[in-house]
Image 1: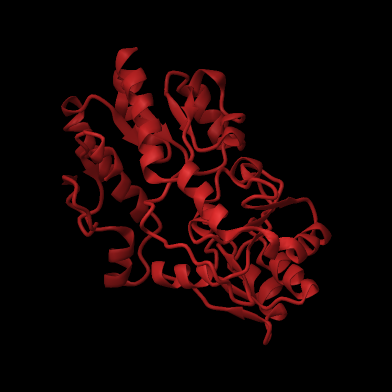
Image 2: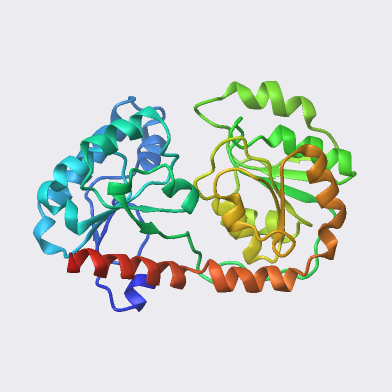
Length: 316
């Protein structure tokens, strides 16, 4: 929508049950819709849905000046000579073998990194620029008064470390509320590492919709973000900031780009540093946290950044 507000004609390739005001292409339902209808589906269903959507794109490639892809791998082969007038956003880490093989085979594929930390892992030939994520500025509202609890929001996995968040909150004497899904790729992590730590001061809320996320983050004194992987962006950090809620995050991946130490939160390197940061968190100005979100992480800013990349690619 932010791109359309800048005068860009946008066509969205998406499942048939998507809710959007944009022109949409896609005759097949989403994986979630199929699972609601049939229960568990065959492991190959996501790949089949991806192939069907790519076929819809192939039939219309000549209709667009720029094709912006958010998929995994197959789109690069489909684009062929159109790769130079395409842009790919990768929403995962780029430092593993699958990405190394992919980028080596497609050195002419322009990639927009979602952080400078992620960009550092891309081959120079693929780097088209860095565009931080953004949110509509009216999606979440400033909450100037915080409750007593701190928040954790994310997948229940060893990459996100909800167990660390519980230990930090408990050591600081703060109740903690946790929201998020149990990671399908690591389902026993929650049972082994998180559930034993739950109690009256540590409550697991389960998966949350947007209203539930807003209540959790907006009412929190702080968001704890104790990641244990090279986070490519970390959208929940700016979701917290949109409410005025400061972030205490571990110094990995994109964190130092997103959190302004002493302004929108604290960047820490250990559980002890996080406990000490929690003792200082009420000294941060929640209005200033919200202002920095508005200056740095809105959808409008993101759209302007992407439009600049589109124009550069068209001119090439």
